[in-house]
Structures are given as C-alpha cells and as structure tokens.
Length: 125
Image (cartoon, rainbow, N blue to C red; front, side, top):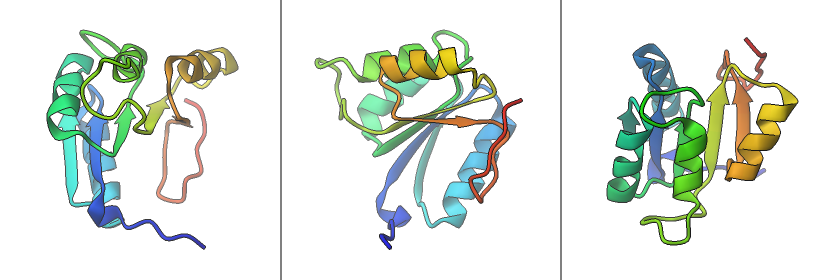
C-alpha cells in the first residue's frame, strides 16, 4: 500500500463558507498536512495559487467573483503561473452526472460530493 506524506504537500482550499474551510483544514491537519492555504473566492484562490504553487487544490463549485469551474479552467491554461497539472478536487453538493462531466472537461481531477467525512464516504446534498 502506498502511503502519502501529507506534511510535504501544500494545499489550497477555496470555499466561500468559512465553516467548510475550517472542516477541510482540520481534516488535512489531522492527516499531517502543514501548509494549508485558504481563499473565500475564485479570484483570491487564483492569486494564492500563483504565489504558493500548491500541490493540491480543493475547491467548491459555487463561489463569488468566479466559481470553482472557472478557477479550474484558469489553472489549466498553459500560460498560467504555477503547475497547470496540479490535482484539482471539486467538492460540492452538486453531484449530478452532467455537472461531474462539465467539471471533468474543465480540468477537475476528482469530484467529491458534500457532505464529506474523514472515511471518504460521501453523499449528495
């Protein structure tokens, strides 16, 4: 079994809900992550992405300024600063098949439905 060393990874959490950011940060810290950056909207997240160059991005779909889908599309642009191949995890309550397909086509690597748990079992809300 392959073991991931979370303390060597940089995470960027982008969600307009401060409670969800806190839950995700707490989960990541419990797995050993040390560098967890947070943004409350897509514009701030893109700025932080180019500054901190995170290894993994976790983003909500619905946010102000621009949403998680637009964030993924901007990160995936060849001329974007940072790593255009970084994994992007879309975490949202909108888990319809059509939305999953749209997110995948925008460059989202994984799709998780809210609510979440540390065990990874999810269900749509």
